[in-house]
Length: 566
Image (cartoon, rainbow, N blue to C red; front, side):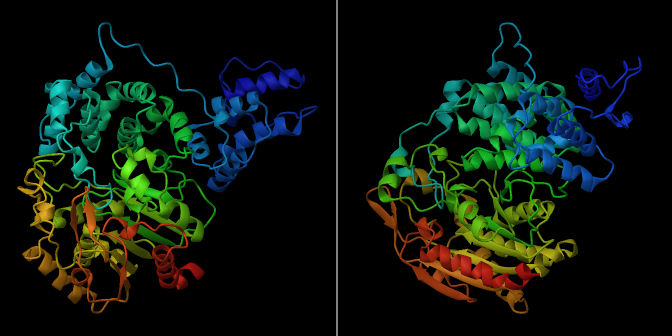
């Protein structure tokens, strides 16, 4: 029902309006209506709706804020807003922290599956409908897996990973085990890759992909991994503004509004990324796949004065790398469980509370230890390639427009160094260099690691991946990177803080390895602080008052002191 119709019903009830004309009447055409005998809070509904469609942007933002802070209305009043507001207002309400979920209508009924068809088959058909030419090798790889392989053969190819540098260490326990995998998951991984191409997003939408993905999302409420991949696809599609109205009309904003309030950090962050990409009223930045805002995840009146970026290491992750340190019991019992079991991410929970004027971003990218276990066998991404890819994504997110501190773990620190070197060569990236205020390195192997030569198991390291080879102590690329960065940093006015592990990292129950020795973590610039933890826990404080977090917080506050005061 239209807003005009609601106005007619309300005003007829209080006998202040004649029957409407035959022509269609919109809210903007109604200049006045009587409020005789109307309760103040009922009148507020119509006034806020009118204000939310004002030609004045400040008035629209104020209206959305007032709506989101209203918690005393009756159900039907929230329903009026839900049915009568425009897409811009609905997205604004979804990105407002205090918004009542009654503002959001349930998604429209989904079309029935075709006779004798299944979700798996419809996903295959959707993939098959997408252009299959001029694709990079990885998109071809994931697409061919999803289209041509059986569930059993797909599962056999999805072997265990030695998740090094932040995702835990399941490799020792998982030798010989085959984690379950479904055709649906491989289809989604292929669709994630396709959704990075704007023209393919158009095809996904035109062929009913938004509805099919919504059906799959609702069906797998107990599988966060599937839901996150679906969110990644919708988030990528939301980068294309001409698809916004279709995404909203298909009911996705209602799903996102609920997901962004989730206590599960990953679910909330994926939803926040998608909503930010939909919100063109307050956002200029666009968050591409793998770039997640940990704070603020909602619209805020708090001025954001600086950015802090978190870059994980080899086989790390945007969220789990930065979790609170697990107790030995939790580490032993839950290391192989789904990452949803880890609910703490200290940059989001601690740093955001201590420094609310910061925008906190964490990035995620795929890496591998062995070419036998890489997610895409054809993918050979060097540090140089990844740094350019990440730099492009971060610049699209507005990194460089305000002061920046980089926080990195393990190989992530090498990426930071390479990104800054690459940015220094590109005039359009000069703001990234000029606004870099500081860098924190958590056990970064500036001079290499024995990881590539340490054959803990021939199955995994007989053919080390390109990333691992570049970490070798005799790697020419690593030496060149170190020399070039020291030369680059000579005349730059940024601060550096280095942490390094002093304890070996246990791999399973029998093997231990000192991944980054003290001499390798010494950049040659800034303080070098040894900490009695292993490589995985060097970036995971035990608690908020632990030295690791407090020293990190001190560095950030002192380095950004002038910027935060302004």
